[in-house]
Length: 516
Image 1: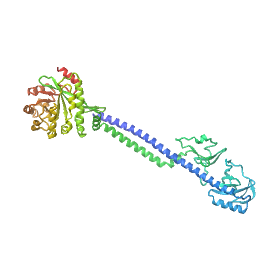
Image 2 (image 1 turned 90 degrees about the vertical axis):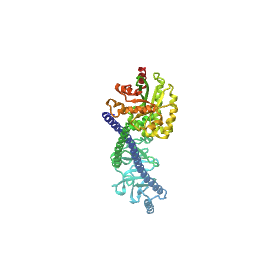
Image 3 (image 1 turned 30 degrees about the vertical axis):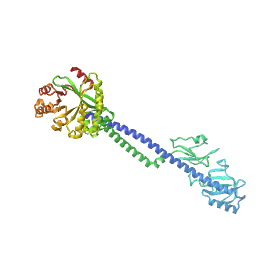
Image 4 (image 1 turned 135 degrees about the vertical axis):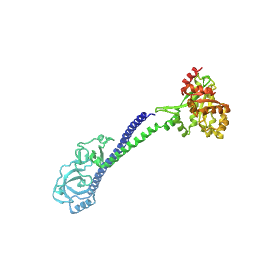
C-alpha cells in the first residue's frame, strides 16, 4: 500500500469513525433523554400526587372532625358545647377553627366563643356532591377579615382548614389545584392554567412525551391538579444530571470514535485480512510455467497463491508469515490444492501428463494429516504428474517427516527440494528423502551474467544432482543468455519470467497452446 493510499485510507477511516461516533452520540443522547425524561416525569407526577395526597389529608381530617361534631346532640351554643368543640379542635391536625350554626347563622366558634350577634355566611364558591359547602380564600371573621382561609361547612358546623401549611397559595406556582364538579373553581396555585370544567375524556387524556398533565385525588375525585412545567425550576433542579449527561456524550463520542477507528484500521491490517481471507476462502491460484530448456516446450507449472481484497494486494512474502503464525498452513495448502486441481483439470487446453507442482510447508510433514492427500489423486482426472515442493529445513529431517514423505511417494507423488543451495543443505538428508527434482534458487541464476562466486556454485549443484540422479529446475530465468548458459550446463528445466509470469489458468492454457 503506497503512502498516498495510506493517507487516503487514514482520512477515510477517520471520517467513518467521526460519522459512527456521531451516530452513537445521537443514539445515546436519545436514550439518555428518554431515561431522563421518564425520570423527571416520574418525579413531577410524584410531586403532584404528594400535593393531592396532602389536600386529601386535610379534607379527610375536616371530614372526620365535622362528622364527629354533627353526631353530637348539641342544638345551641353553650359553654359545654364550646368545650366539646375546642376539645375536638385540639385533636384535629389541619382544622384551625370550628364554628356552629343556629338557624343557618354562625352563632359561636372555638375562637370567638358565643357571638352576640350571629351572622350569615357569604355566598359559597361551590357545593360538592355530598353537600359540603366550600369558601376558598374567604376573609375570616376571627381575624377581623384581615386573613383568608379555606372554609368547609357540613351540617351544623364549619371548619377553617390549614391548607397553606401543606400546599401554599402562591400564584407563581407551576401547578393549579381546582375543583372540577358541576361548577369549576380554582382552589390553590396558579389560577391561570385552567379556567373551565373538564370532561372525563379530557381528564383521561394523557401524552407520554409531555410534562403537561392532570391528576385527580383518588378519594376526592373532583379535586384535581394541573401541572405545567416550569423549565427554569427543572433546569436548576436537574443541573447535575445535565452536566453528567454532557460528560457521557463526550465520553461516548471519544470512545466510539476510538473503537470505530481502531476497528477500521485493524480491518486494513495484514493479519486481519489474511485471517478473514482464510475463513472465507479468498486466496486464489496463479500458475507459473516451467519449460524443457532444450525444446522450450511448457511441460508443467508451479501453483502459487495470491490474495487481493477491497483494500488491495497482499504479496506472499507478507501473508505467508501470518499463515504460519496462525497455524493454518495445512488448511491453506489443502485449499490451494483443491482450487488449482479443479481449475487445471476443467480446462481442456491443459494436457494430460502435465507436471503440477505444489508448495508445502516443511512443518506440515511432521503432522499425520499430511498423508490425507488421496482427494488430490481423486481430482487428478488428467493423470497430472503431481510434484510436492518443500524447502530444505531442519523440520523435514525428523523421522516422522521422512516417513510421511516416503509414504506420499509410494502413493505416486513426486518431490522437489525448493530453493536448493541457500537453506538447510544436507547431502545425507537429500539421499534419505530420495527427491525427484532439485530447484536451483533464483539468486544463483540472476548472478550468472556477472560470473559471481554464487553463480560459480551452479556446476557443483549440477554434480550433486547427477550424483543423486535427480533432475534440475532453474528458477528465476529472465533472459535468453541465462537460458543459453543453463542449457550448456545440461540443466534440464527452467522457470522464470522469460517463459511466463504467474498467471491465470486461461493464460497458462494459451501459453501451452502457443508452445505446441
